Amino acid sequence: MRQATCAGCGLTTGIRSFYSFEGKTYCEPCVWRASREAKETGRPSEYVSLQDNSVCVRCGISSGESDFLLTRGKPLCPGCSELIAHWPYPSWLKVSLALLLLLLAVALVHGKKYFVAGSNLYKGERLVRQGRFSEALPYLQRTVRTAPESDKGVLLLAQAALETGDIRIAQEALKGHDQGHFEDGDSDDFREVDAVWNRAVDAMKKADRASKLAQQDGKAAEAASLMHEAAQEYPQMASLAVAATAFDEGAAFENKDYDLFLSIAEKLWAHFPGSETAASVASALACKYAVSGDVQFREQAQAMLDKSRELAAKDPEQQKAYQEYAERIEYRLKSKEIINTSEYNRRFRSNQARKE
Image 1 (spheres, helix red, strand yellow):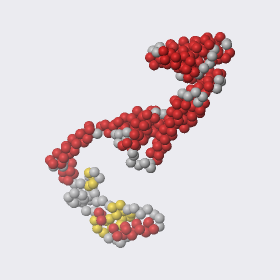
Image 2 (spheres, one colour; image 1 turned 90 degrees about the vertical axis):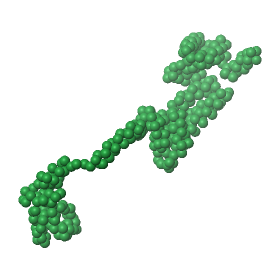
Image 3 (tube, rainbow, N blue to C red; image 1 turned 60 degrees about the vertical axis):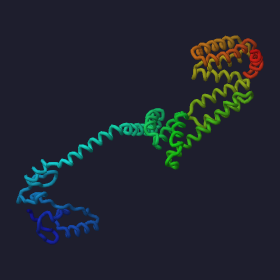
Image 4 (cartoon, helix red, strand yellow; image 1 turned 180 degrees about the vertical axis):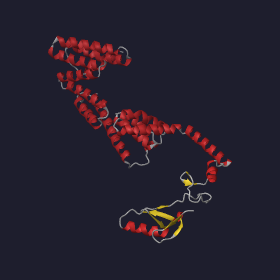
């Protein structure tokens, strides 16, 4: 066993009773004192215990002055080193380990869907934080299908849906989560989603009122104004802005501003080509023909009406709509008289209904 001498008090004994501090060897009382003094003067105060590598840490046998080989950082004599290297684990420990591994395998198999849900939640949340809401939606929908009780998953899904203008998905997520109740209704995440949800609901109410007003004679301008309010309140739903533009078309017709009517109709046709938008252009051109008598407008109106019929050919609902407005546009082209839908129905369709 190796000996050492304390630099403080001169005590000489086995090296394992000493500590190294600032390059000197100290016994325990002296190293405490030296460490305290260093700390008071602002110097490092950490010290380490000395290890006698000539003594086996397991059996205590000494090799004299030579060091034993270190096994996992500890000096062990050859006998102890061999014993530890071939340590016989008890049978009960081996059986317990096997059972633990089996339980882990079962847990991994049955918990796989929750691991997948967690992965989807992580990906969806990252995309939401980046403002990539449409990309986040599929991940968050899969998360909520697996873990519908997750407050975080549902709120993120509702946020992504609301930010892409899909109020239906947001409603299903929020209302389907414990009947709309959340554990922490004061959290920032909940407040943020709740604020957007309330704006979206209010906008939809305004849009509904605007649609009802648009069906009444003399209310087209009021309907357009209300629809614009809805679009401004919930800009995430792009269809509200499109509807507002379409309602402007009705207001222009009602105000007999046929140039504006044609400009709006052509804009909608350019962005959303279809049977109805083609018919709107035809209607506006028919109005221009009725007030100007310019045959070019009549020919253009007829061409757009033919285009509307072609586009509606494969859809029974669109064909039905085409028959309704084509009749009115053709009357305008023949008579050069501009009347609204209710007046046309009063003159020509109410008598037909009575006959039938």
